Amino acid sequence: MTESSRAADPGRGSTRHVPKPRRTRLRWPSIRTSYVRAAKKFSANKATDMAATLTYFLVLALFPGLLAIISILSLVNADGSVSTGMIRILDDVAPPDTATALKGPLKAITTAPGAGLALVIGLGGAIWSASKYVDGFVRASNRVYGVQEGRTTVKLRLTVLAVTAANLIMLAIMAILLLVSGPVARFIGSLFGLGDATVTAWNIAKWPVLVLLAVIVIAVLYYFSPNVKPTQFRWISIGAATALIVWAVTTVGFVVYVSNSDSYNATYGSLGGIIVFLIWLYLSNMALLFGVEVDAELERARQLQDGQHSEYAVQLPLRDTARIDKAVEAEAKAVIKARELRRRYGRAGARES
Image (tube, rainbow, N blue to C red):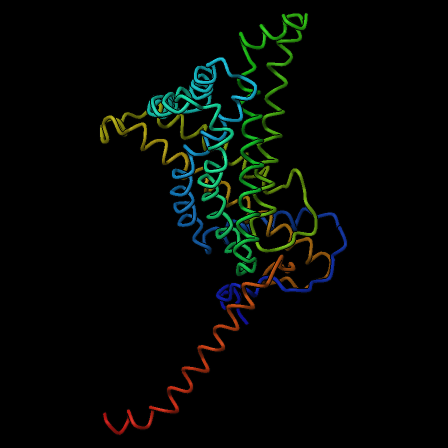
């Protein structure tokens, strides 16, 4: 059976019962082959199309997610300075045109009356809306692993909401780390009697912590999204680290390109910042999907080194098969009904024609 024919069956990549592999150390030829194959599968799985879909869901989830993060921040900062801090973070990390385009909506969210109350009565709704992105990522990761979704609607929804809530909390912590910098860090340092050297060390040390938290956010998304059981949870997976590196390099290159080109403003006018932002989100989602491909191929390489028959696809047990079993049963009933129709009316229909 060819690889393309196997890829056509979304349930062929993984099985219900797979022997637990020994944890063998990946050799360099296996790593190199995994990255080459990940790049090929990225194209074969039409990951650019999936990235476009995820960008759409991310845009829909963006402002509900911001509302949830700001509501969480209101617990530790209720004096109205959240707006100023978030806008400063936006200026630091986003392209200039994007920052300008988002300042207005962001200020409207952070200064809306009752933002603290939203933590009590609106946080659940915000998380529900923001979970649409994770829902889309579940479907994309299932496609990467070549499996069908087997979790029931309730189980899948609870998983998606839990992943969304956990990642929003992590993003809120990252926002706090970004807020505690510069004058804010010096002020907090003075309250605890810390010198300028300590504050300077914090301003430097927070960046590796932010990178670590970002990798963990991606790793959680990678682990719980697909309907497969990886051999073990890795707080820092190679695929997550790869995605972050690809994202950072792509972002820097894109910022340099946009900063030295006036084509977006000349073509789109006042919408140039929004267009730049959407393209940046699209590139970011492509980096995330490539990381999923890398993790899947590295797992396949481990299985091959362990002697498993994973030449065509990674072999991992499914998390759940309830939905698959139900779909198979429904399809079998539909086939029986179709066969009855053919036997009852087939000959009469042939004579009439």
